[in-house]
Length: 114
Image (cartoon, rainbow, N blue to C red; front, side):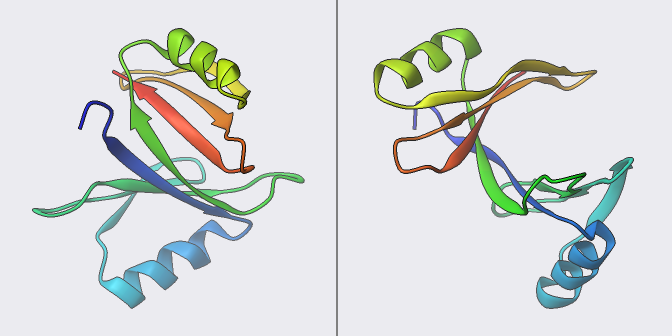
């Protein structure tokens, strides 16, 4: 696959409750990774992910992040195909860069580049 899904994210107003729920439901290994953010370890199968506590009026969401070598070019193509940029590229210090877009169906999808 040229652009694989490399990360998932589940977010809601009560991050600690989400962490406990998924840990108890699936036995996921989940570690704190900063204020209001937790990492889900993939193990031998599947992809790793994250859990986030939303802030202010931010709605709960579930999304995936797709790998790309060029965030700007990918966002440009999103626009050409009828989607729209939701979040311009931002750095995750020591990890990489990400951006988010809305597809024509209204789904929010992330892009990631190391």
